[in-house]
Every structure is written in structure tokens, then in C-alpha cells.
Length: 263
Ligand SMILES: NS(=O)(=O)c1c(F)c(F)c(S(=O)(=O)CCO)c(N[C@H]2CCCc3ccccc32)c1F
Ligand SMILES: [Zn+2]
Image (tube, rainbow, N blue to C red; front, side, top):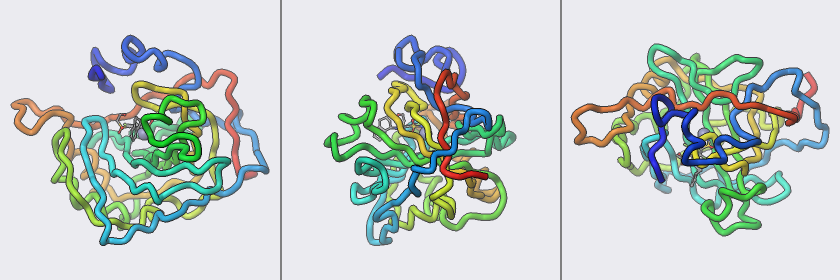
């Protein structure tokens, strides 16, 4: 579809001109504020299957002009939700080299350095992502907040290849690795709310699970992610850095954020 960006004349305040849902209700991300939270004892820990991929499997690491993404095999899925949600891809949102503040969700207005999203679709009801993406029960995204701190060996499994996808539409094959290692230790502590894609077309089709606990990557790893990529083509004379690729928090309206933990 039409090209959209995170800043300038095609930035987020203009998205709704071509993508009406972006101006609608149930939008994501949101600021997860304490006064919105309601403890829900029925929320079960997230259970994932087949996330530990063998190095014999190849994953496609790509630069789609909006983010760095890894395509995921359909054996990976979430088994603890009312329907099976099958993995499609994971991608990231980040700040810039001088500003390690690029998460989409914020917690009591605290913005993290970056955020990872693992996108799944309801494979009990829909054959693929395209059929699920605009359905109210179509998608489930796992969100992980990322801080700069300790080096993270799991992130190195794809970051070491990032210079092979510097420009839009470049892809490389990387060996499979344990995707579970990218998630925080506790999958039983999370925020849960109904929201949307955070990029056009902004369909209100996402069951969001944002883990309570963040993960860390080193400053060098953050800089690699925040400075390696461009949203322009390789041969273009003026390269456009790909950074600050996060949408601002949206209106919560009457939505409630459920939490799986008490304190
Ligand atoms: N934050 S977010 O809402 O989770 C989110 C993004 F921020 C994001 F950039 C992407 S993208 O990288 O595909 C670039 C622009 O759509 C996606 N893709 C999803 C939704 C669009 C269709 C589709 C088809 C196959 C696999 C994934 C997806 C996305 F879901
Ligand atoms: Zn995302």
C-alpha cells in the first residue's frame, strides 16, 4: 500500500488518511498506568510450543523498511490461549544511537530502549496471517520490553547478521536458535489488553500480552540494532536511517488492562 513513516508528512498523525482504522478505537500501543490495572486470577501463564529451533533450520532475517523481522516456522505456537495462535514473525521497535528510548508500550510513562513483538495468528479459525489480520480474534502478539544493560547472547544469534540486511527488502538466512531465550524468564507475569497493530493498517485485531519483566541487551547490541539499518534502497544516493520506529501511546478510553500478578 501507500508508504508511511514514523515522522514527517507521512508520519503517524497522517496515517488515518490512507488507513482509517489508525484513527479509530482500540489502538495500540498504550501507556500501562497503575490506575488502569485489574488483577485477573483467571489469566494463565503463557505456554509456548516449539520455540527452541534447531540450527539446522534456516530463518529469514529481513529489513522490510519499517523494522527488522525474523520469519518464524508455523510449528511455533501459543497453546495457553482459548485458540491456538501460530507464530508468523517477530520484529523490533527501537530508538536511536543518541536516544535509547524506543519502546512502543510504556509503563507508568517509562519508555524502554526497545521492544520486541512476536506476532501470532489464530490458526484454529484462519488459514494464514492475511485472513486473520483484520479479525477481532485474529492476532496475539507477545511484547517484550528491552533495556540497555547486560549483554544478551540470544540477541547475538541474529544481530551478528544485521549488516547483511542494511537496506530495505534485503534478506539473509540465519540458523535457527532458541526463540524462547529472547523472552523474559517469567511467562506468568504479564499485562493483557485488547488493542491493534501499531502500524498501518492499525486493525483492532490484537490480543496484547506484554511481559512484566524486561530483558537486557548491551549498549553495543543496542547500537548495532539502532544504527545498522536504512529504510532506503541500497543504490539510493541519500540513505534514510531506520530508527525511532515506534508509535506513540494511544488513547485507552474505557479499556481495562488485566494483570496476571498481584504485586
Ligand atoms: N507492532 S505490530 O502491530 O505487531 C507490527 C509491526 F509493528 C510491524 F512493523 C509489522 S511489519 O514488520 O510486517 C511491517 C508493517 O506491517 C507487523 N506485521 C504484521 C501485521 C501486518 C501483516 C503481517 C503479515 C505477516 C506477518 C506479520 C504481519 C506488525 F504486526
Ligand atoms: Zn511491533
